Amino acid sequence: MSLYFSRGGKNLTLGMQDFLEAISTTLEKLPAVRKVLAVPPDHTRMDSQAGPIMHAALKLLGKKLTDVMPALGTHSAMNEEELTKMYGDFPRDLIRVHHYRTDVDTLGFVESDFVREVTEGYYDRPWPAQVNKMISQGDHDLILSIGQVVPHEVIGMANYTKNIFVGTGGSDGIDGSHYLSALYGMERVMGRCETPLRKILNRAADLFLTHRPVVYVLTVVESTPDQGPVVRGLYVGDDHSVFTTAGELAAQVNCFRIPEAPKKMVVWMDPSKYKKTWVANKAIYRTRMAIATGGKLVVIAPGVEKFGEHEDVDSLIRRYGYRTTPQVMELVAKNPDLAANLSTAAHLIHGSTEERFEVEYCPGKLTREEIESVGYGYGESKTAMEEYRIDECQDGWNTSRSGERYYFIRNPGLGLWMDENHPHAF
Image (tube, rainbow, N blue to C red; front, side, top):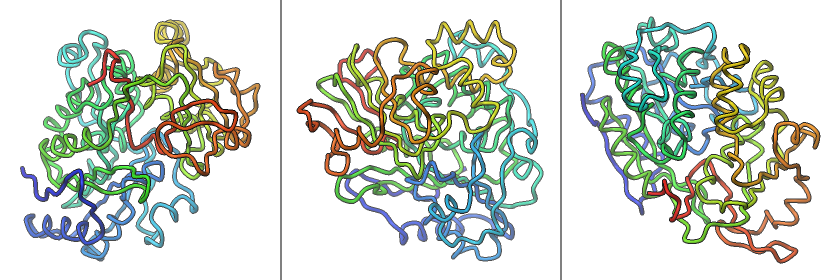
């Protein structure tokens, strides 16, 4: 097991030539391959630069690249517009859709004693290691798992083994992973490489994936005011070191400490990426450790038109709303429909303010009645865009048209913001 390629630094700018070199160098160090499966992210992780990386892989592998399965997890399959924005003219006949309810195998279970120990008793069930059947039963001699290491609300730092066990996982594994982490506490998790769920997934990989030829291609991407997303790190390998190396750089370029807790924060959610609160609530996750108690978070999300990725999930969010952790736990105990969908229960916890601050949600098509029914305040997206001068303001402190001081974030998916005095800041 090895780290095949490692290039990264706070001041580096990496691009296509680096992608080509990384994959070429890796292929030279591996046994000859004849059939390759790639597992990149979907369009909601566009900043990962997986699109250009997939084109680099296709250029080097040619017809050996036989299957490309975006790691959807519970997300909806990408439509043509999303595929084009993410992957351009990449051959559509190579794209496979992951169905998390039907296309999975359970490889085994991480034992309950281990789960109980790493979660400090918050969760004590065995965790099912599930993957898409193309991974468990396919005859590929190389599986390229591609994605970005960045702060994440469920696992601390995204990607690596999460891309396989959650991105191509099944209902039971995804439900358990999200709920156990939500109970442990997202503020104890975000921005960290060593977390309860990471330990569980890594153990599952050690137990059940060693017979499959998985190689991870991981990027670290920084959001810059003048260039937009810039790749600062690129790492390729097949053991835990590839993730920890990338995670160290991500902690430097994606985690931000603010000396003063903002009383008002404004977050812009790109409408091409964020169409449901299921993913647009990153605005809440990534700022909750920064915003002042009693403050307000304004989420400007003109693309948001639904709550959940699927109709049953959307219905559960509408029925129960974004509640505090104790309230959601009680709802799970009393309602079989929510107990049967623990990833949605986790999402309700993640999207809650725990009654510490307010959220004003400014969506696209969701109405005031719909937004208020789930526990948020409502705002008009067009009015908010004008008031906070979205076309001209910069990340950091700004002043609204009416003279109010606020802290602005244009791309919350690429970071974690913390009040330096927050008890879980690091």
